[in-house]
Image 1 (cartoon, rainbow, N blue to C red):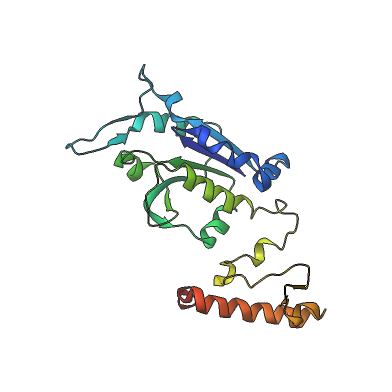
Image 2: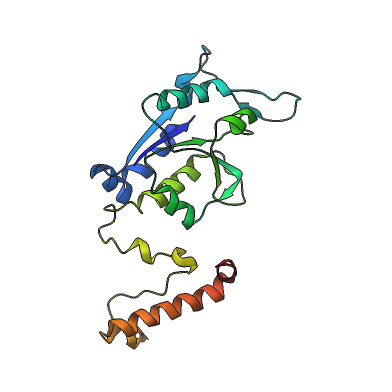
Length: 226
């Protein structure tokens, strides 16, 4: 999978993609993450990427030309499956969206800044708009990092245990069950006996029951949607 990220502050993205699972995915050749500085595509001698909003009002607006020039340079190298804009008013990102995006080959993610991008980009160029929550960040970089992390870990071969991602929270609209590790007893706190029984069928049944119970207690809305 090839992910192109467009930003005015690409250096913010370097650390999240150079450690842990994302680093291993790149080293295995399973994911390629390419950062683009939108300022490099500005025709302005000051490398400007924003301007005042027509009609007045506070805040600046990201200009069409630098962004579209960057997008078109990427498209010239091959077809792009999605052009995603990270914005607070986009669709709420969830596990189903991550699953769907993980099946794509080439994706562009545009990180918003200031008061957002010129609306004409959203009308004619952007193919999908995504939000990571009902709040506003200083820019779309952290939100893009969240999306990329959630997507890449689903690519076959990225995780050492192929089944790990399938048991994560929100797969099948359920939260993950409780998990335990050694020692079996610590300060009088004991691991449930069923997990020490060696009965794999009974353990899986218990885990499913716990997932349903935890979802009812903490996110009943997930059960209403399923």
